[in-house]
Length: 183
Image (cartoon, rainbow, N blue to C red; front, side, top):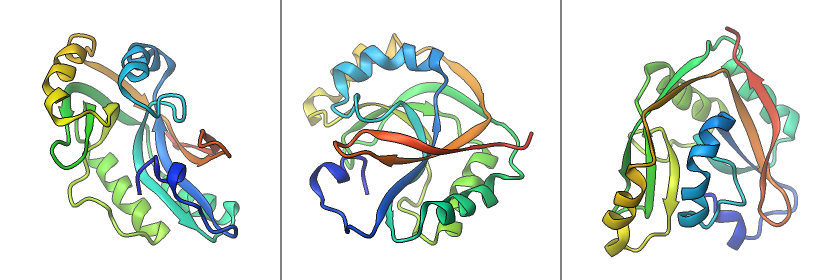
């Protein structure tokens, strides 16, 4: 399920939609804000983030979902996030992203969260990233990447929490629970 799912798909009145993400520090948000404003049509609907669990619909109450996520994060230590290069998912998915070096603990958390929440893993290989541009036509991928690449320096931060987010009416995603890591 993609982030724009909510914009076009009615949900069951008895169900809620959530996702689990790592939100970027404000200093990194400022770096990518101009690019996202220009190339990401969902710029105003969701803060820049690293997705751990893609949007999912559930009939479980918020506190039950939060408890499942909390169980998986209670022993986590801060995770190193190294943002290094630009990448894309073309031709399969029209996205350009800021690549995050794979970290064993981050990948394990991704798989454990999906297992704990009882959802199938959507992609065989987890590629942590921050979306910069989406819905770019195929012939514009290279020119857009060339415009973006000079503005994305190598950066790093320690992720010390994850957030459970949900959409408001109108499609804006907000955090409903933050789960700090233990360490």
